[in-house]
Length: 163
Image 1 (cartoon, rainbow, N blue to C red):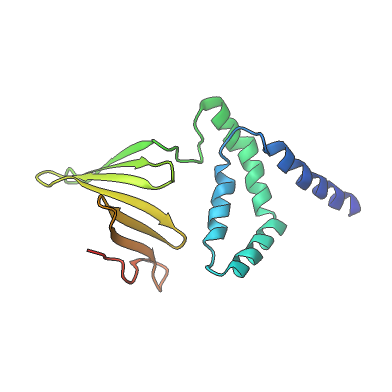
Image 2 (cartoon, rainbow, N blue to C red; image 1 turned 135 degrees about the horizontal axis):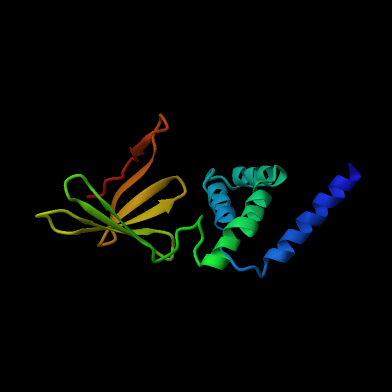
């Protein structure tokens, strides 16, 4: 038992030292961090969750996964299979010829250009918030905010429609 505690302690001390100069974006560990940041608005609840997922060890597992898999793939191929790379663009076509072209921004938001026949082009910016996703128009004004409704299904949040 004592050997196991010593081994875990040594690994816990060794991993941060070996990852400080590592190449890679650590997308899985960052996702765990963002999830923890959005768990609750109270800092004490977030701190307790932080302690729990370090004891379990969720952060450690995410960092090891990133070191062994995500960052290695990113190093050798130039792209990370777990991360949306800023500048990446994807186009989705609708059943009636609608087109949504989405580009990942440096800050993680999405720039979306919507086009459809006979209609003017629409531009939106989708921003992930701790408990919602907000859509802003090209003028920077909030268009809508969607989050979990009372039944757990996606719903427009109170005061979401600004126009």
